[in-house]
Length: 174
Image 1 (cartoon, rainbow, N blue to C red):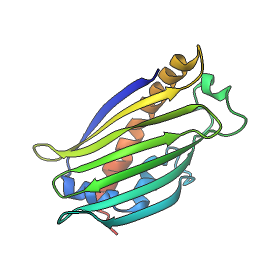
Image 2: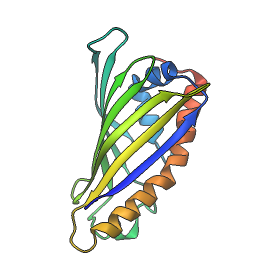
Image 3: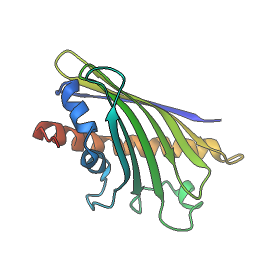
Image 4: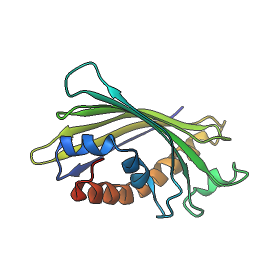
């Protein structure tokens, strides 16, 4: 069984600004830096031309330690140390739309997630939409753990939205 998480956020910046941000490895590190410690590690970053004009492909792998106190108690009991999330994002970037896939693993646990992401134009800006399936393959406890993970992710998205907004407002580009 798995638990679905679908959410979206609006930004007053167009898709081209978002595409430029997604093509910058530092953007990915900054957007996930929950506690401001800079402990997010970009393990791999690859960028290549896509199949069409103005079409780029980006793949980024991140390692993210989760600060103490932000790990659901039911998950903390599964850990022998600090919770580390390994996140892989693969994006197809165009000035009109950005489409991506995400895979998330929690090494040392039977918890993982996967799904899609998209940045699409709105009237004056863009909308980032994320649709994930979270799976905790633990008999009897899996559903509760999945719900706790979803609640934790929802709690973190406000800060992530703020960091993305600041990055886009600053017009940073490599």
